[in-house]
Length: 182
Image (tube, one colour):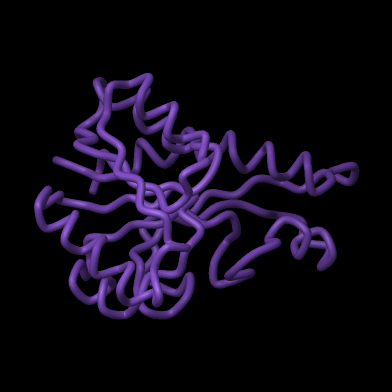
C-alpha cells in the first residue's frame, strides 16, 4: 500500500510512520508540507523520502492551493493520504476528489473536542479520560467515520504539557499500526 504523509510542523507522527514502514504494510512514497519551515522536512530528508513543499501563503485562495495539491496527488496516485499534524482545513473539492482516501489523527476522543486546544478543553471539563481518534476526513471538521480510538486516564496532576506528551506518545504508537491495517 502506497501512502503520502502530510504534515505542517515538528513531524513526530511522520517520524513514527517512517520508522515503522519496513515492518508494517505500507510504503511512504512522498511527503507534503504547506510550511517551508516545518521540522518534518528534515525528517523526510533523513529517510530519503521526497518532500513536496508548497507554501499556502503564496496562493490567493484555499481552492487554488488545493488544486495544486490535487495535481501533485494525481501524479503519485497513492492508496491513502495520511494527515499527520497537517494544520490546514482541506477544501470540499479536495476531500471529494480523494473521498475515503484521506485519513487524519486528532488528539481527542471525537466527537468530543473537534478543532484546536483539545488537551486544555479536556482538563477544563474535568474529564477522567482523554485520547486520540483516527478517522476518515470528510467536509465536516473532525467528523468523519472513526477508524480507531484509544484513551488514557487523566491524572490529577496532568497539565496541558503532560497531556500533550502522553497523547503524542500514544499517537506515535497507534497511527502506524492503524495505517498498516487500512
